Structure formats: C-alpha cells, structure tokens
Image 1 (cartoon, rainbow, N blue to C red):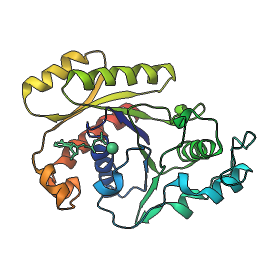
Image 2 (tube, rainbow, N blue to C red):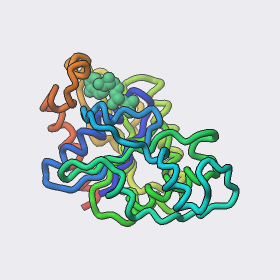
Image 3 (spheres, protein in one colour):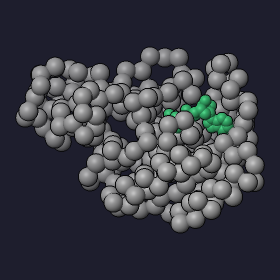
Image 4 (tube, protein in one colour):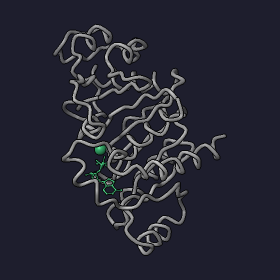
Amino acid sequence: MKIAISGKGGTGKTTVSACLSQVYLKKGKKVILIDADPDSNLKTTLNIKQEITPLIELKEIIAERTGTKPDERAIFFKMNPEVDDIPEKFFYKNGNLLLGIMGTVRGGGLGCMCPENAFLKAVLRNLILKRDEIVILDMEAGIEHLGRGTTEGIDWLIIISEPTEKSIETTKRIEKLANDIKIKNIGVVGNKIESQEEKNFLIEKLSSMRILGFIPYFEEFKKSELEGKTPWQAVPEILNYVEDIVRKMEEKNG
Ligand SMILES: Nc1ncnc2c1ncn2[C@@H]1O[C@H](COP(=O)(O)OP(=O)(O)O)[C@@H](O)[C@H]1O
Ligand SMILES: [Mg+2]
C-alpha cells in the first residue's frame, strides 16, 4: 500500500501520517515514512531526538549519483540516478520503521530542473514503484512531488480537511490536480471535528468526494506536544479512528 497525504497547512497531515505509520507497525508491517513537506515536523511529531540528515543535504551523494559536482549549477545531469541503496543508508531506522526527510529544495521549488530535484524525485519514484513496504508520504498542500511515472504507484491520496471554507478550497484544488495526473483513489479525512454540525458541513461541501473518516478535535494535543508525546501517547483512541480509515482504504483496494 502506497499512501500520499496532502491538505492545507495545519490541518493535521503530519499527525495523520504519523498515526497511519503506527497503525501499520502495530499490524506487524514494515513502513517507510517520508517527510516531503518543506515545512516539516514529522520528526518532532514522532518525538525522535536523533539527528536525521535531510536528503537534500547529501551534496556529495547527489553530485556523484547525478554525474555533477557539488554546488555546481549543472545543466546536464542524470535524470534517473541510481538510488536503490539510499533508504537503507540514509534513513532513520527503528524496528520496522524507516523514516526519510526530503528537505527543502532551493530556488524554484520542486519544479526546478536541478540535480537535487532529480535525485529526490528518483528516491520517491523508487520507493513508490519498487519497494513492497507500506509507504506513507507526508506532503505539503500540493502534490508536486508526484512526478510523471510515479502516480500510478500511489494507491491512495488522502486529503486532510478541517471544517473551514479555506481548508475546503484547498481540498478541492488538490483534488483537481490529483485528477489531472490520474491518481487512482482520492479520499478525504475530516480532522479536528468538534460537533455534528461541523461534520455535516464537510459532508455537504465535499459531497462529490469519497470521505474515508472523521477525527475529533482533541484538546490534549496542545499540551502533549510540549511534553514531547506522540499523538497516540497523548490520545490512544486516535488510533481507532485511523484504523477505520485504513479499513476503508483496504476495502476499496482489496
Ligand atoms: N484531531 C486533532 N485535534 C486537535 N489538534 C490537532 C488534531 N490534529 C492535529 N492537531 C494539531 O494541529 C496542529 C497541526 O497539525 P499537523 O499534523 O502538524 O498539521 P500539518 O502537518 O497539516 O501542518 C498540531 O499542533 C497538531 O497537534
Ligand atoms: Mg506537517
């Protein structure tokens, strides 16, 4: 199963990504979790203290694999660098979990034609098309990471939505992009739900989309972040909600 998570900033992408990984780990699965949001905080959410080098900072490796020199403003470089060994060598590992951090691409963002970008995209393509672990991508409010030749490997795109107009606008924008690049299954998760009214609001506004589930607003998260707790250490029941989401995805995929 290969899952990409998107949605407006602050809606809960990282929280849900982290919880999804925990649900699969509890089932005994091997999981590769990728922090692909430049505004990244997955490591903090998982309460990992160890240093993890973002892939974008592997200058020597990127140069070697793309056939360039570090810091060179290369025009010619390999678009399909060899990256099979990157997860095992440079990801954080803990039991059945591998965690990779992409880091921020300089200049023109992910659209830029540069060796770093070719390298990061190759790593993602490799994870999505060649690995048989569960792969979970915590992305930004867009799906630019999913280049050509990668999208067909994605089983589900989950868009996290809060019950606000702005979040819904972003959700619809992402849905359109995802349809354009022909992502197979797109689902919405309503997060931070405080009332039946808010739930109905999302159901009504997103009536044309497949809703995979709702997660309540948990006041505890505010304090627990300061205490360095993971979401499920703060509120164990959040995993029940995420397990339901996994069941829904698997029903459709199965
Ligand atoms: N269900 C929830 N209830 C309460 N707070 C939440 C919930 N989900 C996420 N949050 C909080 O919202 C903030 C943003 O969440 P995060 O997962 O980092 O969002 P994103 O990755 O989309 O930017 C965090 O402080 C997080 O603890
Ligand atoms: Mg995030």
